[in-house]
Image 1 (tube, rainbow, N blue to C red):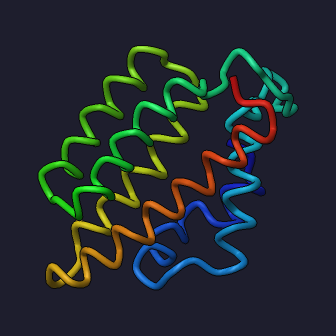
Image 2 (cartoon, rainbow, N blue to C red):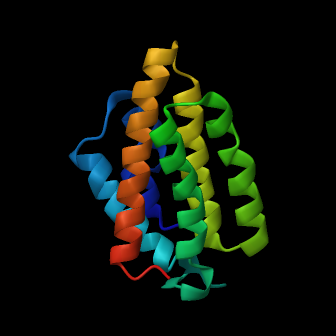
Image 3 (spheres, one colour):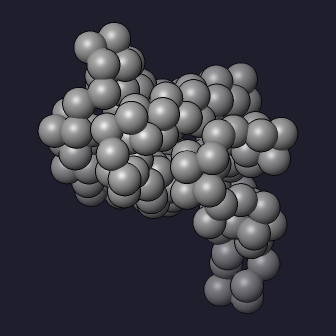
Length: 147
């Protein structure tokens, strides 16, 4: 992942899940969604280039998003949310692209933040923030031609 995207908000995902989305979170979702369609790689000389072969596919992101939507409709369920982690691991290892690895890293961090809520009410609020954050990433991924 390019250094600019990482420094823009990669590590702030936890903050946004815990405290709610803001303009910066949406800007990060846009940059991240775009990056996932053609991750920035470095060649042997250290020069950056875009590589569509390392992209996160729409089917990968939609499989996880479908589970998030099911959880949203049923109401927050810790077990269901926990099961997203092995699904992400399977999807990432199956495809092995840089985009899938970057996506997994951000989404797992966000899931952990939901699970770290102090009580069920806080976890529910964090889950709603997580679902909205995820939806923003998906929308931008698709808008930039994610396939």
